[in-house]
Amino acid sequence: MSSMTAATRLPRLYLSPPHMSGREQQYVQQVFDSNWIAPLGPQVDAFEAEFAAAVGARHALALSSGTAALHLALIHLGVGPGDEVLVSTLTFSASANPVVYLGARPVFIDSEHTSWNLDPALVVETIERKARGGRLPKAVIPVHLYGQSADLDPILEVCGRYEIPVIEDAAEALGATYQGRSPGTLGQAGIYSFNGNKIITTSGGGMLVSADGELIAHARKLAQQARDPAPHYQHSEIGYNYRLSNVLAGIGRGQLEILAERVRRKQEIFAAYRQLLGDLPGIAFMPEAPWGRSTRWLTVITVDPAQFGATREDIRLALEAENIESRPLWKPMHLQPVFQGCEVVGGSVAEALFRDGLCLPSGTAMTESDIERVADVLRTMGRR
Ligand SMILES: *Cc1c(COP(=O)(O)O)cnc(C)c1O
Image (cartoon, rainbow, N blue to C red):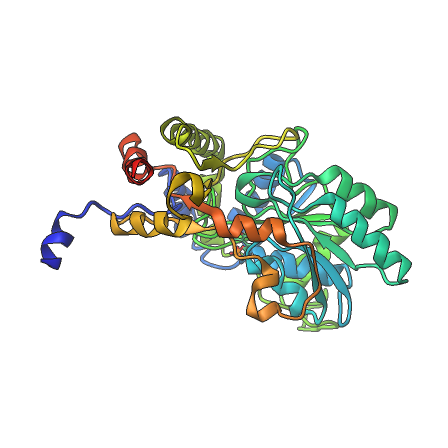
């Protein structure tokens, strides 16, 4: 019985699998032809230059992950034991972990309703309260979730006024815009991820960008075991091995070339879902804020169980039964066992989004019939 079911099952639909263009292999071939099978090398240099141009950043540093990029930015800014760093609570743990690597404490801030990202009003309120207490946060980390920019202007304004650096976590927002510019390039530093499920991937990797040449030069040194300029091995600070491989940078170059195409396809997939599901009572889509363009990296819905007749978990299980992967939104950091005891400001917006939100398969290689396959599951449930 179960083997028959397995045999008749359609292939698994994943949330956001890698989607190669074919160009990647040409760059990887160059790596093999030149025997630059090493960390660093000409593909890394080219990837950094091309990436900086693509997002409009002055400097870019290719690294082994987005998490490593955030870690190095925080080190450069002098974040250390006992310091506080404001972080979005609705995010992946990698936005907050590097704060803890350094012995500092994250202060989690709730989302607003327009973009589901960091609420600027709460950032202002928290910074002013901390200022009255005589102890300012050492940095602020806004996160740009699911392909959409946070409302950066008011965050940059208050942080500028108190001289608090802003590090943007743009891991999920490559290709998005904020007032016509790329999120990730408006703060003191920005980080991007090329993990397997991101809009472009190198299998694993990350990028740190900044207009501050000193920040990037220091991060570059730290990423290479903090070697001082000397013919022998000399070190005057603790280093890390965070470089991106020249092989993987070749994949990144091929992926970057088709970024615009991938953004277009993500937006088409969202439009198709909205067409097929938009009339279902109790189903709503992640809003697009007026300040920019979302890539729709993932199509995200919220479910009102009273109107729809089923919860987001019912939907997730029904999709799973059809061999379709879907996923709840990020579980807010202030609800994570590992961050128990951390300060949180607000939290009810992120909690409601976690309770009711579901990410649907959004891979750019999906066909129209794949999208219908997902939508059919929801439409069948909705009619009950
Ligand atoms: C993926 C992701 C990261 C981490 O990137 P890695 O390259 O996997 O280290 C950080 N923040 C957010 C919001 C992410 O989605």
